[in-house]
Length: 426
Image (cartoon, rainbow, N blue to C red; front, top):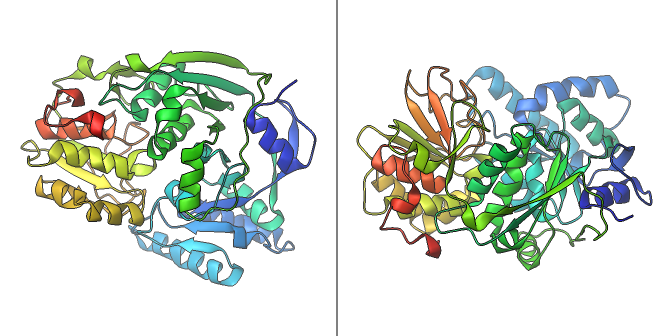
């Protein structure tokens, strides 16, 4: 019997011949990540395993991205503690403004094909875009990983999703992921691994592939994985990753379920009503008035997303009364956007930029709190009630292109209607 990607990676890291869904095993970790949001729990757990030196700390990144910048003295103290911890243990630290954890780990060369990576955030599934097994864990688990370099896992079953057909201009991986949420429902892939394959995946650039894997967290998935190809290997080489060890599923691999989506038929999608799986086509919501727009986060804060926003806004102004905030996923992305003139274009149109981080997305910093009864359209991954700091505001989710088009017109807008943008060239 053949094996899926997740089964192969877990078996290799557990030093066993094979494994099957439902098995429990202890596996070696290649790299670990701790965010400032989960640091208090992790630090408390360290006191409970004081007899174990933190030998794996040098293979751990501490990322100050949620309380970025710190909104109160308690957050500032967490940061101070983490800086001291990094100095004492040899852990890598990325300070405020450097970027979001899920962008930084691959961008800084901390992972490669075939790796097993854990992080204290559910969107650690993003690393599957690089043919690595990324899984979210709690702070206490992360502490154990730093002490022992390994953790226990239950092998998840795998769902195989084939995406075939060229995405139409103006349609992006974000729209695929929202369609998936509408098809399966939130938690519809709970504790499953998802393997994405097909011609649409092959055609995606790395930025879109990261979005595809990132949103698996909203499906409840334990992991989302792509096979490696020349794009993967080139990107990893450009970011000084270790020698890749690509892992592919066997043809005889056993899957929990399989299905296909004709991605050529997809249209821009939206999530509404404070539910990530209440999905409609953008044309069904066209004309809904908005007051604010957010582009960024670990899901859609990459360079391609910022390019989409700039293409929509170039030579134009935001609709009267509309606010637009862009949060790049990393400092490096911000700098590239500056070099390409994208920041100047967006600011000239009336938009603003936040430093790279998660604070705006989860409203920790309070820098983008909407008013009562206002409607926000966002490229983030969640639209839960109160997500942006006001449970009396309404949040819709869409692609960066859809968000930008809506900000330009002041109402929810199909990006394909923006006739001054040639989407096929982006």
